[in-house]
Length: 352
Image (cartoon, rainbow, N blue to C red; front, side, top):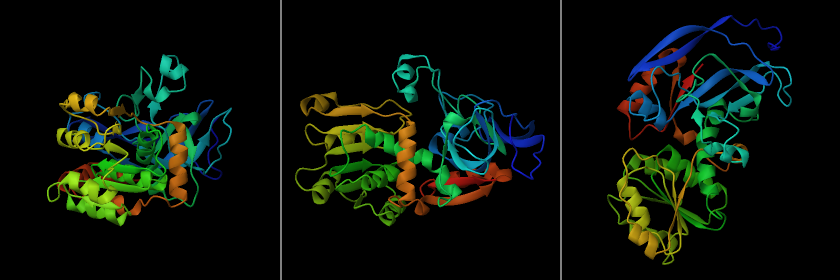
């Protein structure tokens, strides 16, 4: 049975934000869900909006249909604990891993359930956290310390994307890393690389604002391909041996081509960006230079733990990426703000 916070009477209904179609959000009164065995009820405090959410907002996400309840970058506090749950207490600050997996396919059976054959993601193929409270399996939750803000807690998820992408390399510490794209994920990839001990990090973007933010976050070399030759910048930053590895974080033809063209022979390229259109890849160069193109998807529980450690140790700087806050009742305005500030908006939060 769920255990409400002492002295608090939980309402029987709550507000839930439902995206009913492109550019449309409705608020509905729904029942507060009961807490079953092995579950937690989380009072939601912050939700971060990411690029994939924007694709849904435009009606262009290939794997999401309407209506949908969004919200997968999230932080909150435990307000109900189900039977058989260990390791969580009322009032704990938590974040939620949004994968819903089958548990029986080959990836699930071999410890790689983040690439489950039947993978669903909260906020896309199944209900997300955009409601005042959310009931979820305790196994999907991780606690974070009170020294971390709710904003930082909601950014554990995108940081885990970066940590997992870097984990696809043989090593990060002591290496020279090139990052193509300085949006939220690219910035976090660059910062995580530095936080995990990379010798030097270069980041590229066409937006001077995003490059300025990267510099504010301590990235060694921030390069605008519109004003400086990328190949020359790589040599300037890393020396004639260039980068040990590159990570493409845009999902665009131009940056994928740059990553391949400027890769040192025998080096790795991790494909982090989500491609809306199929890129043309010069496989001749990939073959001739013995490059390795490596895919990356989402994250594991360990990636979350590493991310929490990077934040608590202050080895990443998240405050410069926090662009704006909107209360839950003004959810739609948050998307409109992002639309008006495409190059300058990094992370926008919904506050409860």
